[in-house]
Length: 186
Image (cartoon, rainbow, N blue to C red; front, side, top):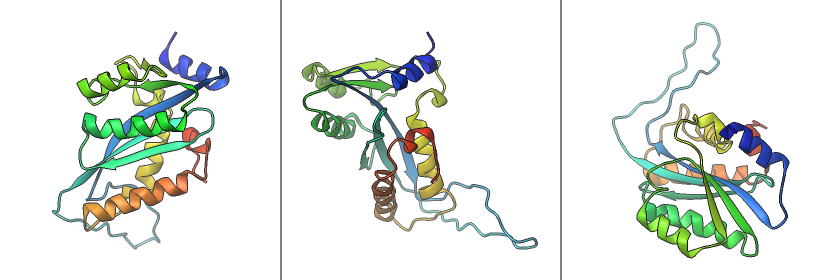
């Protein structure tokens, strides 16, 4: 069975007492990611640029059935920072088992993360095969939406300003529920 088919099957069927949570992470940078934009004929939009470099790590998780989104922002993609997100998810579902769907990122295989998983028996991991593309994991739709609203054609003066914009995005996303995983742009 392919990973895409498995995720599709998980979306259709929900076992009582289980939550399916999709996890992933990305970087957000101070300088803008370029994206097409509309302009009147003869007018060319200006995209501000800077030589300042800075980034923040964005850790995210989404419940496959309810669309509930969890996030954690940090300065680096480390196992210790990944644990903050795992604690959020485990605390949200204390009386249910959690099936985490993950790719094979380095922070997921970190020793601290593996120790945490061994201590938390309510959490079971499903590792997406390494050959799977990013489009298999529906949380990738959330990252696309994140980039459109936060980083495309936006220049940030500081990492704190970038993190504030990211927090604002996730506050707004919380009201959209399952649309987040469908990639809807409401």
